[in-house]
Amino acid sequence: MLDRTLNPAALPFGREDDAPAGWAVSKGYVDYPAAVAAMEARAAAIADGSAGELIWLLEHPPLYTAGVSAKSGDLLQPDRFPVFESARGGQFTYHGPGQRVAYVMLDLTKRRRDVRAFVAALEAWVIGALDAFNVKGEIRDGRVGVWVERRAPGAPTREDKIAAIGVKLRRWVSFHGVSVNVEPDLSHFSGIVPCGQTEHGVTSLVDLGLPVTMDEADAALKASFRQVFGEVAEAEAPL
Image (cartoon, rainbow, N blue to C red; front, side, top):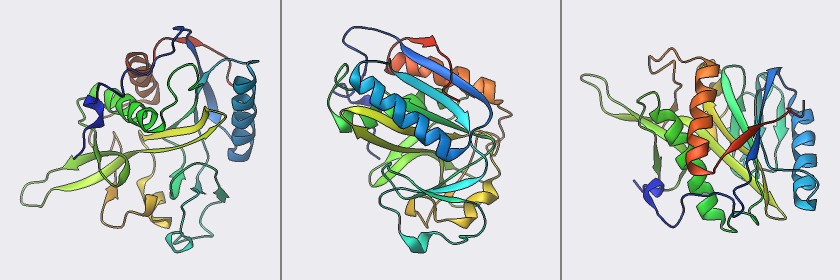
């Protein structure tokens, strides 16, 4: 295991001027193409200096997305849910109800122009949020995302993915972001090979036996974000 969360060169990832990032939460399910259009418009406005940074939390209806490294053979059930191509890094992933998606639109010119440190900061953010529920999130070399070890009596230890990370940078402004499994229908992941990983499963906070609500998950994400990236200010959701 490579624990980047302890790398002092990567953290924290605050702004040089300490300006707070906007924090917005959408209620209900947000259509994926509309969300991507709104996210890209906001990222362009941030790059132009006409809008501030924004963390946008939402849920999507059930769908699959194909990142820039997606392999066609990893889409096992192409007719199960809508499939969208995505500009983010990574392979196939699932989004749906019970999963908290956080689109991260940050200006790295105001923070640090270091992609690896930025990804490490995103990992640390999610790991810190999971820690609020006494869940030990970990990262693995060669595997994107945040993982948890599962130990059952008489069974070998296995590792399941609890959060995915996939980002894109344009003019040093980030978009796309992270998704944390709070209480999604885990059977929906069976229509793809999640992130190209065939030897590992997926899990959620509720699957781990923790009756966490979305509001509680949001509160943990906000507290951890402040530790890693700095202060936030309530903002209006794009949709």
